[in-house]
Length: 122
Image (cartoon, rainbow, N blue to C red; front, side, top):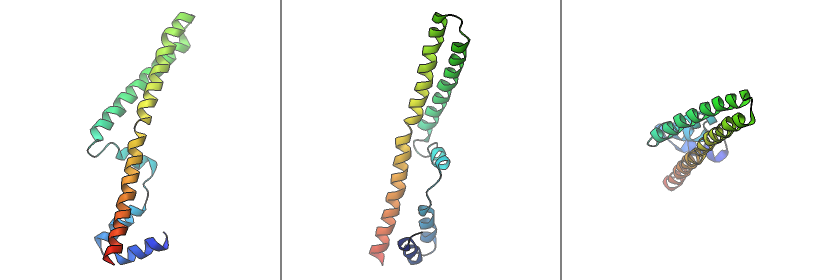
């Protein structure tokens, strides 16, 4: 914790101090990722995760069939869908990263607002 953070924490009282301490800690990756499944857009992210998982499992199944193929036509028949399904699942998963970054920015903005309020107060 830096000196400015310590000074701000000392200036706060009770509940504000706990909020400030919570705002200092950057949550880990998994807590941020699972945090996407809650809130106002949580249901959308849950649907995306279900579709992504179904695409990935289907891609794995088609990939298995690709490696079992005995002819070139059969390999093409299963290889192309396997590649498309796995890449589609990856694109859906990576599509959630901007929301993760937006949540990080919102957390930092709230922290900055708290610091500005404290400077006005003190």
